[in-house]
Image (cartoon, rainbow, N blue to C red; front, side):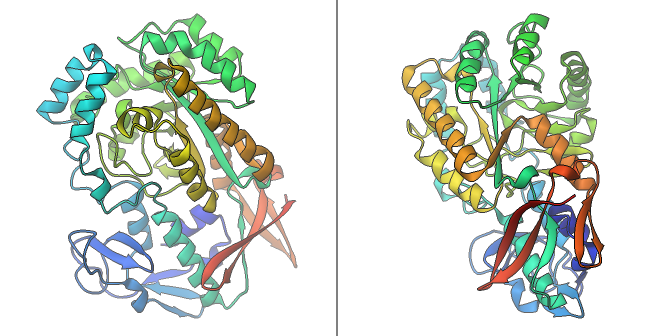
Length: 447
């Protein structure tokens, strides 16, 4: 049960000794662990059927002894239940598989934004009252793993535990700019968007729909890559039906995989962020970007409750951690960067991944374009003042895979990092301060 701790921190395995204390409940449900609501089985009172109301707190049954943290739950189960959205009643939460949804996506290409946003606001009514995950950024997975690190410090009676820092070259966090191209209007605006991004020295990926929406020519692909941007496969035809049933998904996944090879793309994103993480083994891509951190304002509700990348089998998930531009402008009717800046602050508190979706299709007006430029200016400022790593999804994919194979080696009183890419890796030290996890990143790369 130690793998979720060492996977997240890349700390020496002796500091991640955990055991389950007691017999897990036969059914999964909600309970508390410290300040966080979690979902799974527990060795205590029956977990709750909903995340609201009085819930048993597992803190009272945690016991640390002889270097082992004894928990009244299976940590791996809790983490996976949240990351993979197993707390939901069904994989699509009644979204993509409904008759109304099928009718909507059939008519969607002919509907102007003014009509679509009205229908979507009706569909999303009550989103403010959803208790779990926590809006506007949910870091439950990161919080509970931080809590486990504190307990490990106590169990071992040490002042600090070394681990491999999350990002290369001591970066305090990471940011991804991604552009979903939905229509021919978006295709025509891609050169403009690349010009704007270049003016702020911010790389990006362009998610392209292979079929039905617009031609994806060799010249178009080359024009993106020639300027240092990345190409990602975006669904098959963006009709909202990719995950409707397993048979249809497998049929389409085979085509999507072939387009991945044709486009030379290592990454994938599903249309409308519909997803079923249990089926990702059929996707022949290194990484995916289809899972929101918290999905109150998406057609498919849920969220992975983490601001860090994580593996789904062999596929690396790069979660969407920021509200989409379409949602901000057309659902929330907000033409400011206030929400984005609030989300960035919360993500940066966890040193996490700032992952943004901006559609060229919706940057046709000067107001939307100016807000986007204000966001780019904010990210560029974070790069200069906070050493935030702004890069492309495939670069994060490569780094995270390298980091997953690295290890800390102790040689006397000295520590070093072994593994490919270790010349960019840094050792950080976790300690407890006033009951909270404190991290000392000394700014020195050790390899």
